[in-house]
Image 1 (cartoon, rainbow, N blue to C red):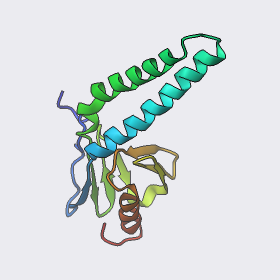
Image 2 (cartoon, rainbow, N blue to C red; image 1 turned 30 degrees about the vertical axis):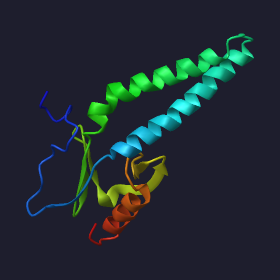
Image 3 (cartoon, rainbow, N blue to C red; image 1 turned 60 degrees about the horizontal axis):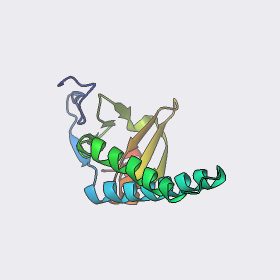
Image 4 (cartoon, helix red, strand yellow; image 1 turned 120 degrees about the vertical axis):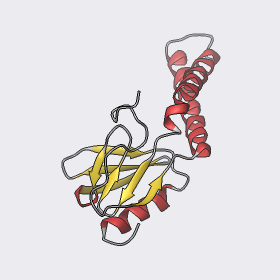
Length: 149
């Protein structure tokens, strides 16, 4: 599909005089590292649930947790690793036709390798799988303050 609502790259048109200052792309290593952590958590939760239920085969919780996250990781990798956010002088343009004005960003948070953007209206967006989430957040803060990203 080629419409903007299914594209993993920005499709919003640039305004007159607006230029892309920086593009935020996902990092393959960060993607797999985050999924390894999710797998470890899912394995622990699966084992704990079986132990609490009194199941004598607690180890199967680890197998199930690992399998669930592995399937997810391989299934969504092709889309997630193509996602891109472009930052202009005034806006962030994201996948699936997302647009956020820099002046509307209320908070920047980090979650794993992602940077969460929270707008004044409460909308939330994730720049996922960043190689250096702190550098991404700093670049966004500089742009929000009026400096070059």
